[in-house]
Length: 141
Image (cartoon, rainbow, N blue to C red):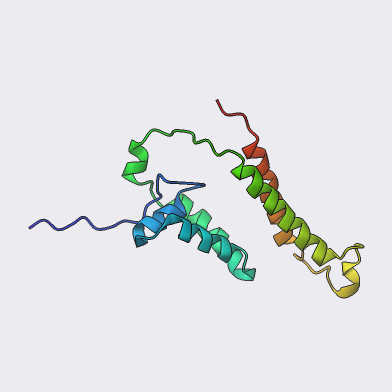
C-alpha cells in the first residue's frame, strides 16, 4: 500500500510578495487571504510586529519554492491601481501615526514623546508606502 507523500511547508507560486503566506495557507488548508490578513494584523501589533516581520523574512529565505511554482512560467499580472491604493493607505497611516507621536505642532518632546525608536513604526509604514507606490507606477512590458 502506498503511503501519501508527507506534506512539506514550501513557498507557494500564488504569491503576492514572497509566497510565504500562501505556502502556509496551502500547508494548513486555508484560504491564502485569511493568512495574509492575519500576518498584516500581527505586523501592526506592537512588539509582535517586529517578530512577524523577521519571521516572514527568515521563512522567505529558508523555505524552498514549491515544485508547482518552479514548473509554472512567471506571467505578470495586471494589478491595476491596487498597489497604488495600498501604498497611499500605508503612507496615510504612517503619517497619521507619526503626527500623533510627534504632536501637531512638533512638540512631542514636551510630553515625553521623544524616546528612542518612537517613530520607527510610522517611518517603516511610510517607507513601505513609498516603495509600494513606486513599484505600482513602474511601466511593465
